[in-house]
Amino acid sequence: MLKLKPNCEFCNRDLPPVSEEAMICSYECTFCRDCTENLLCNVCPNCGGGFVPRPVRPATARREGVSIQHHPASEERVHSRYSKLEIETFSRKIRNISPENR
Image 1 (cartoon, rainbow, N blue to C red):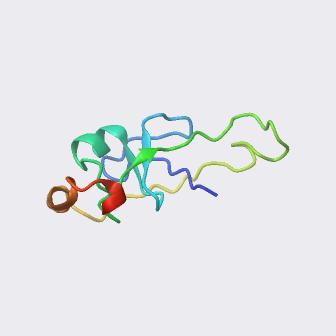
Image 2: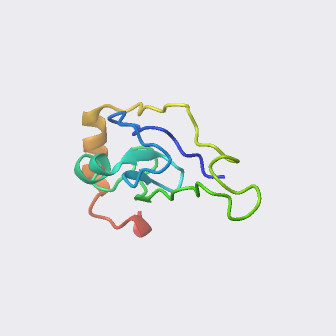
């Protein structure tokens, strides 16, 4: 089950479950669209992968037991362990390699 984290791991911006600004990598690292585009340059600072928009979990159970009420978003805020300089240095090394070739 995809863990819907409540915030950007870098700038701490709120990313509620319905946010279209939430971006995730294949390990579910979560950042806002602004950070992924302008700071991270589509490079996850944790795994080196790329980002895609985080899906929005359905508000209404169209199938029994499948909705945000049945599988709520996480309330645990996550913060990057890397500084802005460490992130920029890491990103600079691999951002010109497409995510599928990293």
